[in-house]
Structures are given as structure tokens and as C-alpha cells.
Amino acid sequence: MIPDRRVPPAMSPTQRIRVWAFGGLAFLVLVYLLRGVLLPFVAGMAIAYFLDPLADRLERLGLSRIMATALITAVFFLVFGLLLFLLVPVLEQQVVTFVQRLPAYIAAVGDRIKPLLQEFQDRLSPHDIEKLQTSVGAYAGTAAGWALDFLKSVLTGGIAILSILSLLFITPVVTFYLLRDWDHMVETINTWLPRHHAETIRCELKEVDRTLAGFVRGQATVCITLAAFYGIGLTMTGLDLGLMIGMGTGLGAFVPYVGMLIGLIASLGLAVAQGAEWHLLGGVGLVFLIGNVLEGNFLTPKLVGDRVGLHPVWIIFSLLAGGALFGFVGILLAVPAASVIGVLTRFALENYLRSSLYHGGEDS
Image 1 (spheres, rainbow, N blue to C red):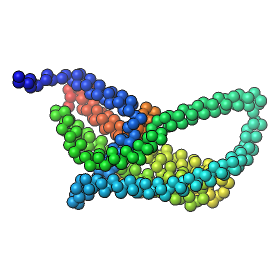
Image 2 (image 1 turned 90 degrees about the horizontal axis):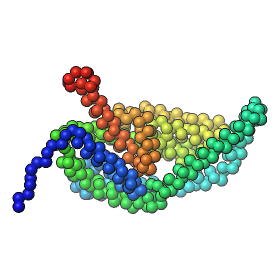
Image 3 (image 1 turned 135 degrees about the vertical axis):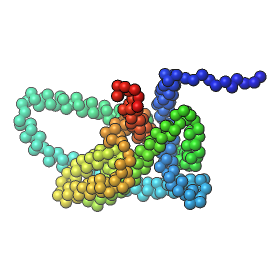
């Protein structure tokens, strides 16, 4: 019997929209259900995307794709492991020292704010003080509940021991295979595109890639540079936990403005607890001033530039939403998802501005 090779009937626009909407919803549900095991795969995909241009460059120099992939993957994880080997003992020592000095810090802060609290208390009536104590107790209980919920989600979510082990052992394997087959996967996906809209989809995907390359690759380089600068700078000022706070500040620069602001507040607060000496406060302020100038006038314009097209508020919202919905996997997927949504939104807006819905007449 000859198989029936008739072309299936064409779908209406409404049917196509339903198919794509169902596919997108099914993808989100699948990510949500598998969020506990996706971490090493998403991390491997992110690293492969980050390193793909370097593999292409080595290919142009004459290396095979497998050799280029093996060399890049080995060097990347060797350098990463070496940094961990060198930094973990230093960070551990800083944490131990901080814990030992913590009672003295608490006493020093208490001595400084006690006169202010006494003056504030003298201005209030006994009834107001009682109401304030009740409110503070209620808010403290709420904050403690939030902290416990967050700790529980961390311990049972994407950063549990099993996930950390999978990051260490599975991510390098995933990175190698994805980096080796990256170009082949791109070509395969290209053949799956709907033929009628393939060129339009390619153009939009190129825009997504341009946005991601500008932000992820550029901003990652900025963050690593700032982490080294702030870590060394704050350590040289004599700030306890200077290396940890500095590295956290630099890596936190991935979220525009937020990382620097939190790092500055933490550094100044710790400097006050250490004694509020002018040379320490001045050193911390100078480090953050130089870091801000370095980031705003040299690193970001050179490494990121104006290619991103992602508003800082949109990035912050996407990171918070991704973390709330999918945990740590959602944080890793947040920026790519924000890039796709941003590109699709601009595409839809351009079509709207050319349509009769905007002009009131026929489509232009």
C-alpha cells in the first residue's frame, strides 16, 4: 500500500496561535517540574554559549572542533578550580576571624547607637514605646519566618548538596558536548523553523543573540574584573571580610546598581562596627568611588556598550521573577528569557506601529 503523502490542510491564524501558546505553556510547565535537576544542564549551556566564540576562533586558526572544545573546556575548568583552591582558604579564614570578632562588633555598635536610642526614647510616651515594641516584635517574627522559608528553599532547591555535586561533575561533561555540537545544533534548529516565517525568525534570533552576547559575555567580564578590584581593594583597606564583600560586590554588578549599592552599605556598616576610623571609612569610600568610575567610564562602555537593549529595571524584575518561580535555575534562565521577551516586544511594537490598529486605516 502506498502511504498517504497528501499535504495536511493549512492551519488558520487562530489555530497556529493556539499551537504555539500550548507549546510555550508546556515548556514552562516542564521547566517547573524538572527545575530540581536542570541546574547542571542550564549551567553547562550558559558556559558553552559563553565560550562558543573562542571555539570558533580556534577553528579558524586550524584546530578541529573537538580539539578546540577539549582545550577550551579543560582550560576553563582548570582555571576555575585553581581559583577556588586559592580563594576558599582565604575566605574561610576571613569568615572565622569575623565570627570571632562579631561579639565585639555588636558591642561597639550598641555603644554607638545607645545614646541615639535613649534620646529617641525620651521623646516618646510610655504608650508609644509599648506600641513600638509590639510592632517591632511582629515585624521581627515575620522577617524570621521569611528567612527560614528562604533557607528551607535553598537547602531543598537548586543549591542542595546533590545539586552542588552535579555542578562539579556533570556541568563539565554537558559543557563539552554542547560546545562541540553547538554549530550543528544551530543548523538543526534552523531546519525546524516554519518555512513561511523562517527569515523573520532568524532575524529576531540574531537580535536575541546580539542582546545576550552584549549583556552576558560583556557583563560577565565586567563582573569578574570588578570582583577582583573590589576584593583586592577592600582587603588592602583592612576591612574584615573585605575579600568576600568585594567579590560579592563585583559579581553582584550583574544586576545593575544593586550589587554596588549592597556592597557599599555592607562595607560601610562593617567599617563602622570595626571602629569607624577615618582611614578605614575613607579607604572604603575611595575603593567604591574608583570602582564606580572604572565601571561607568571604561569597563561597561568598552565591554558592553549600547548593544544590550535591556533596561536595568527589567533585568532586576526578571531575576526576581525567575528565582521566585524556578529557584536558582530560574535565575540562570532569567536574562535569556528577558532578552527573548524584549526582542519579541519590540518586534510586536514595530508591527503595531505599521498596522491599521495604530493608523486607523489600511496596514502600511
